[in-house]
Amino acid sequence: MYQEDGFVVLEPDQPEQILTSQELLEKLKGILVNRQEDLPRELEKFTTVEGQAEYLMENFCDLDMGSDSYLQWYVIRLEK
Image (cartoon, rainbow, N blue to C red):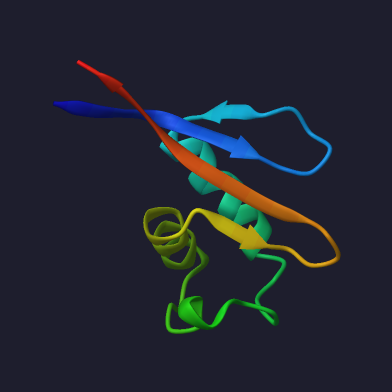
């Protein structure tokens, strides 16, 4: 049995971060709120930033933010 304990988050020129799912969701919402004119195609069907961030977090593991900038996240699961 595995348990989701959080996410490792990687950004250029930053040390890796360990975030809870709520912290990652807030981080994604903060990024997406300023990118509504430049959303990945898969997110255009959602009418709220919350919905976009949840879908992104649950179905992808990275977000291209242009000009050599990106955000990547990976689930941390510990054996229980």
